[in-house]
Image (cartoon, rainbow, N blue to C red; front, side, top):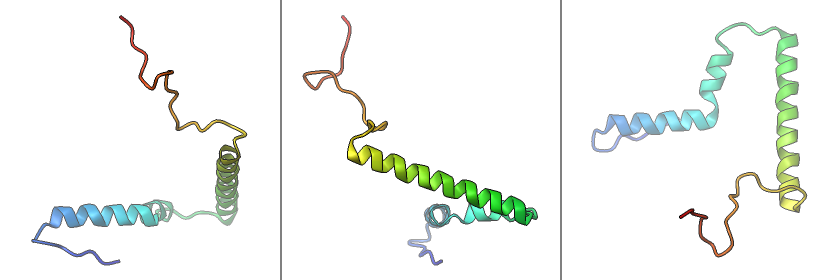
Length: 86
């Protein structure tokens, strides 16, 4: 991984580095490798991660197909304006 430092701005370069490391999952990996993980624990963790991925994919597919409402979208009152009290 390579980060370019522009105009001797080390703080900005560190920010970019941390963001890249976060995206790659390096911090999670370091935290996980801090202690020994038994093979049975590793298998259980990997199965749990696979279940979470499958559920997330199924939820996204159901939202796309219109079977369930998208939880991220906010409901807007008729007329396009937010409801206010007088």
